[in-house]
Image 1 (cartoon, helix red, strand yellow):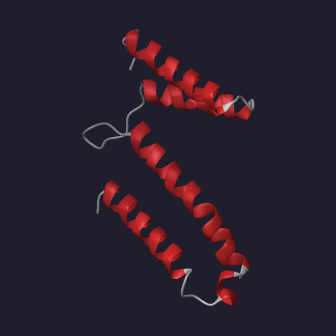
Image 2: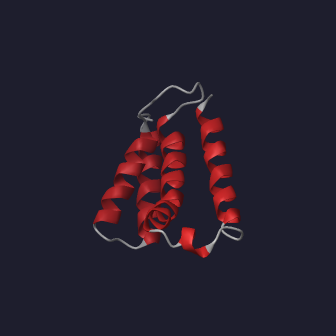
Length: 104
């Protein structure tokens, strides 16, 4: 099973659990473990998609290039509580400059 199949399968499972919320009794949905899992599942899926797009090349091998540097800059900006637009612009500019310099 390749990485995209895993991501798609996780997305289907996430959708199915959201849909099941309409038919599952409220007592099960109010359980603390269920609440914790459903609270963090979208974050985990988004993180997986970001990791796949940042650290893989066309052949599926792990690579470090300008995209990883852009992600690092975005993480630093988020830690400094920069506005979202500033985070996106800083990451894009970093990636573009490194690619223009021939590094990535």
